[in-house]
Length: 120
Figure (cartoon, rainbow, N blue to C red):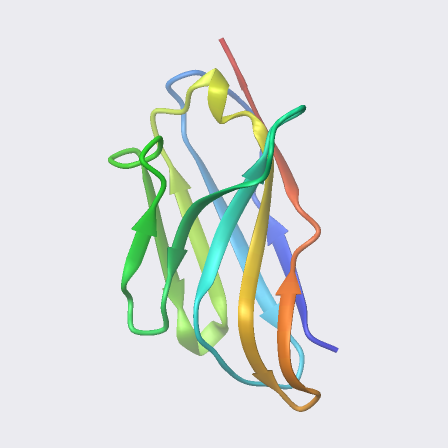
């Protein structure tokens, strides 16, 4: 069974930094894109950043210049370095892999989410 497990969330003061990690486990042959979404209380889930297996990246306008997404294909792991955090970055951050090729077939997988709280 393919799983995505996030870590690195927590409480940080405004202006601080956090690094999120998301590791995929299971009988995986390949993963194309991986990304991070977030959902704040009372708001819709939004894409924060995504990265392809080739390293092409996409960012939400609200995080450009502050967040950096990267991945280690050998470890099936994606990272989100978050700098200059603002209170409006407070949300549950979830890892997402829409196209995983695994022994079970072609899968779309979500992580369980990790909370990030930025205090002012």
